[in-house]
Image (cartoon, rainbow, N blue to C red; front, side):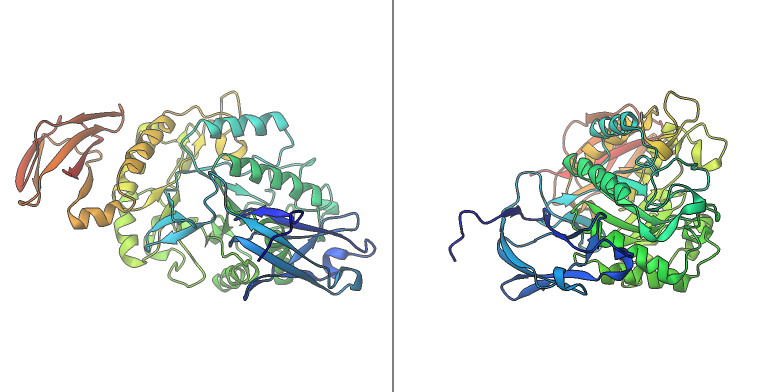
Length: 478
């Protein structure tokens, strides 16, 4: 089919936006229904539209197939209904790999098949405080870091006092109107999500949390308001390819909602999202009871988002549910008085290696409370800890190896052995007799890799330095 020279072009897995003018009276957030059907050959996608204030309505769409797409709007308002057009979706540019998906049960990959290993960090409220300087510093810090995923909240907490950017209309708890939204808040958030996209970083959006304690009134919303909020957020943000949905942080701290409520909200997230971004939910009080985690086997969950201090449990979590494991919170490096925020950089580095060597992924955070910028986990800014460069070293080691290192170990082609706190003087390995292997000794803290002389086969002894935090990388020759 011939393509008109003046037809609008949109890159695959990028964002097409249709802007329309309509009624501004009343409450358009509630009163006006808007969606659009986008069709490529016989394939149809129908995302919701949204009201963006001042009589402006938008429908955003992320095309996933190159070629000509046609669209027509559907609306409860005649002026917005039946608007039609077309555009051409062009192949993706360099660095655009699409949405991150689950691959081979325990792994992740971009939609074009490029492997993705999540090395995440936490900056819960870095977009809320209104400081352009601090946000730009955070982005520069992330650019120079190994982190390719950021956990970040949408809703305010009790200790966040006005003036503040908030998702709903209003400026303080007394006039917060949860029947209307604040388009300026979302426009700013979208700008930062785009900034993260340019850096190759996924925005793991925490949609609910239990930290408000009734101050802003956002942790005890009724079911209709929860659904209203979810639908608007997804209509605005789902067309960004670098978005994940974390339904709630420490969901079991919220005393207003039951497991049935969280199930319902996760199913609504699944229903509203036409692109099926990654979805999970994160535990709090049950972090010491692995058997009491949210049931990640439920079909609306794509991966396991876990809070727990012990990365050795990764093995049992893999056996329990065949989905990727991301220990998003494993305690933070820092000097906070709270037990979750004062482990050493050495200990956090150890937990990363322990989790990765067992087939899971681990998240980073910092909670230094007496430095130039506030705690990283809250506001971003600068990183001060000793773990960041070691995590960068680990990421390089992992990306040099096979995409599925656990499967490679089963097949006898590659193995990463991590010894943690143990101080072995030697290790007896059982390798395949008919194959030859090269072995490297890795000092995970000092970030050195030493090749052992010769090749190894069958039962063999490898001498070790008798120090903690050592690893062996074993690779089949050829």
